[in-house]
Image 1 (cartoon, rainbow, N blue to C red):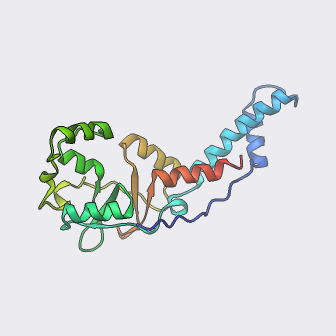
Image 2: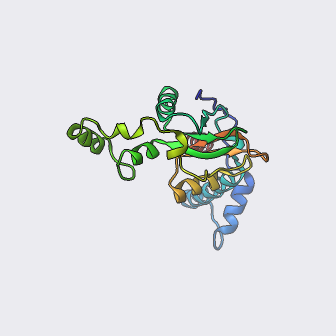
Image 3: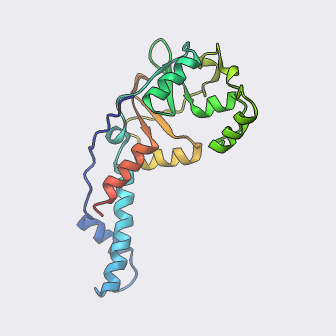
Length: 204
C-alpha cells in the first residue's frame, strides 16, 4: 500500500467561543490573574479538543490507497504483499470488491499456534526450539481460511473520537472505511489517528 495521507486538518487556535464556554463552566467570579488564566486555558483546551474529536471525520484523515486481499489468495501470496507494502494487515474483499474480512499478523500468529499478541522474543524462543516454527501450517492455505470475520468497518462521516473509542474497545489497529454501497474508500489506522491528533493539538 502506498501511503496517501492527505493533510486536510489545519491546526486550530482556541476560539473565542471555546473561551466563553470555558468561563461559563467555571464557578463564581473570575478575576484574570495568571492562575485564573491558566485555569481558563486548561478548560478551554479541553473544550476545543472535545469539539475537534466530534468534528474531524474519517474522510479527512483516512488513507485512500488501500491494499486489498482476495479470499482465494494463498497465505504465501498475502504475506508477501503485506511485507512488501510494510503493513501488518489488510481488508479482504469478495468478487464485488465488498469487504468480507480482515487479515492481520495476529491471524497468522494464531494459526502458527501463538497466543494473543506474542512478543518478538516469545516468537524467537519458540522458533529456536522448533526449526519448523510451525510455518508449515500455513502452506497451501488461503486467506479465507484464517481471516477475521465479520469485518468491522466505518463510514466517512465517522468522527475520530468514535474511531478512537472503537480501536480501544475492539482492540483493533485499523478500520476500513466503506461507502453506502459497501465498497472500501479508505482505511484509518492508528498511525492516521496519531497524525491527526498531532496536527490539531500542536496549535493549541
